[in-house]
Image (cartoon, rainbow over the protein chains, first blue to last red):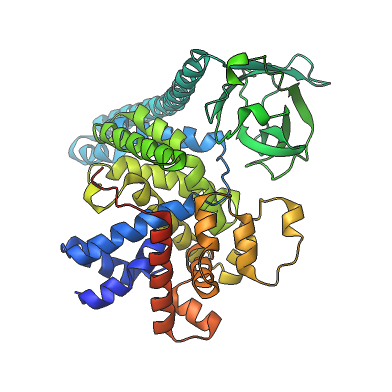
Length: 266
Length: 201
């Protein structure tokens, strides 16, 4: 095992993630052994690391990352016990007659096809459940916002040739996130995503990227809205997957932040 | 307690409650902690790997590990946020290694999403550039209060993700000097930020 003195000297690198795998494992082993001095240093440096990390300019990941994550955890918890491989069926064949094996082969293939179909359906269901969980979480945030005094709605209108599209954004001056409902938008292509921008001091700032499915709708939470009252306008453009630093694609929605008069805020 | 520290404490308490629910297998709690912390994880990963696809994969992997390892997470070792940030950095840096990124390319791509007007300016000192690109706040103030040598090692170690050996080669300084300078810089920052051990909150 690594000596205490060496492990202690490597704590900063261990926390910052720059150690080789071998050194990383050695320091982890040392920490697991219960060295109190190194544990204290680890806590100090890791808490500082968390603070330094929060100073990095914040940007939200695309909505499909969360969907994939939720789909995967649903898959882990539900599918493992249901998967039946055709390998478990084949050893039986050798033990019976040719006629019976042919029958078994037919049955095994049918069963395999049925399992594949069930797997596809389950996969689709997992996707739907993942989206429902995500939507439910955002709906909860929207309900929270709408229930607060001083919240207001901003209307975003469709731009030619998609004038039917529209969106509503819920904001509150004291809350650092907002929720947007988007309707009647064209489904986003596989390699493109919509990006929502706010205008601050005349400059566009990205507050999220999202996909729109066949139903033309999307529901998204806008993170890191530090000062909703300073937002001048909103717009939605189509951009490459993951979004860009500045809008470059076609505009789909636009709306001014027409904040209602709120005497209590002044 | 100032408002920044207060909101930070509220956020840490929220993480703690969500982790307790995740330990019990509550998938909605995972969705909530994702909403709460995914921007931080994604932004941090992006500042290291410099591209959307890898940043997204790191983000997904971090929250998968939160889901799978919440039961063995030991709050005595530090806050959930500290654990998440440490994991994010490790996974992101591993990814740059596995894809044979060079430290130079990491440095160039760092914060590449920021405003072009900032990027296009010339800075004689890379640490000035790093400071300008960080979000304003207590951390930036604390960094500005460091002396030049301490700021330099924090920039190279944390924001440029260089190992001690890489920093020593880059600065043409002995390895021992780099280690002690980084330790001093960390201690100065901790004192300046009044960083508290929150594991027992």
